[in-house]
Structures are given as C-alpha cells and as structure tokens.
Amino acid sequence: MSAFNGRWTLTASENFEALQNAMKTSAEHIAKLKKIAEAVKANPEAYIEELTVDKAAGTIKRTVYVGGEKKREAVVPFGKETKGEAADGRAITVRVTLESDTKIVRFEKSDDYETNTTIVVNGNEMTATIVGGGVTSVEKFKKL
Image 1 (spheres, rainbow, N blue to C red):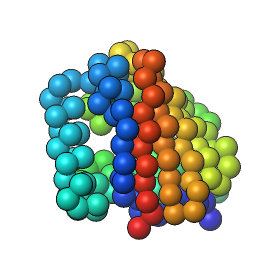
Image 2: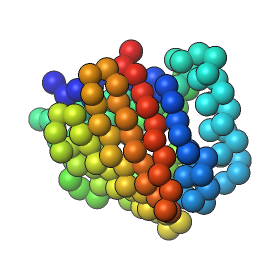
Image 3: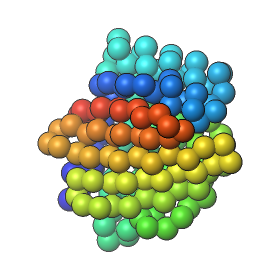
Image 4: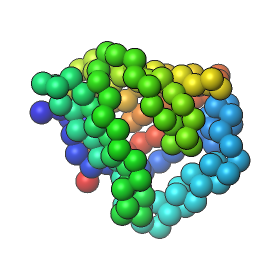
C-alpha cells in the first residue's frame, strides 16, 4: 500500500499567493483560495485531499473536499500526459510519475504557466514543493 493513500489536511502553506500570481491565476480565484486558507486556520478539516494510489491500475485518484463537500475528483494515469482542468477552470496537460511509495513528481502545463511539483510523504506528514514562474511554494499536510 502506498504511503500516499488516505485523507490529508492542509497544515501550512508558504508563498502560495506569489505562486498563484506567477501562474497568472485570476484575482477572483486567489480570493477564493485565501478564504479556504482562513477556514483551515479555524478548522483543519475545512480542506481535505484524499489520495489513492492504485499501482495495479497505474493511477492516482485525488478527491478534494472543502467544508466537507466534495469539490473535485480526478484519476490520472502515471507516466502519461493527460488533459484536464485546473482548479480555476483553465485547460491543462498533466504528467504524474510515481517515483517510489513516498515520492510523486507532477508536471502541469497550461497556455499561461508551467509547474513542477514534488510530493513527499514522511510518516504522517506530506510536503508538496511547487515551482512555477520562478517562484517556489511549499504546502504541508498531515494524515488524518
């Protein structure tokens, strides 16, 4: 079983707004993300990511819950470019690589931006380091 499998709550986010600006995210969407970040300060379970790595199928499933309501769900195959939609609705191409039971690398590209994300699990903690537009952001999660 992959160390990624389970429900994760956001515990810290560094430089995320600067990354969103570098990605040319709309002010409206950035305001929405700030509201979620404020909600997490009051209730750690206000934002949850549920991850399921299925090695047999060669996929990762990511479900996002905000305020207990399912907002997004995507199943992405490992090692293949896949077309999809970013959280703000922009068309993207994604390639996800499972490097080990504790490390995933994700490349995302749209007409406006490119990001490289390295996600590492260490015990009950998960760290996502996102680099795009010359900006680095770090998000930390705790397994529920």
